[in-house]
Amino acid sequence: MTTEDLDGVLEVEKESFSIPWSREAFYNEIENNQFAVYIVAEMEGQIAGYCGVWLVLDEAHITNVAVLPAYRGMKIGQSLMEKTMDLAREHGAASMTLEVRMSNEPAQGLYRKLGFKNGGIRKRYYTDNQEDALIMWVNFNEQ
Image (tube, rainbow, N blue to C red):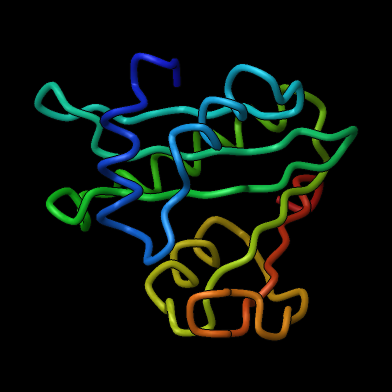
């Protein structure tokens, strides 16, 4: 992801989340956060999705992953996750974690398919509706 991608990324963000990240938040992630890596997926000349990860020592933390509704069901999210997992391994990560809404069963199914396991619950994690988050982990050495 580059700053030139921000308009497309913000469209994905707006279509995917009730409280979308701001342009400034993404700009700071890609320009100022030394631990952050963000990738985009393009389809038909537009940003179809993106994924972000923080790489800190031997651990990777997915910050967000989203796909435009028009492109869901086309395995773009899976491809973004697989590429991000590969990047994390290349940078020496031994494990990866993420939070997902308890109600987001399709995403949980994808993460399980990729080897993630339940690791706990963050109570009232999401500020828009106080929904709990399921914490999921994958240990790359067990794959």
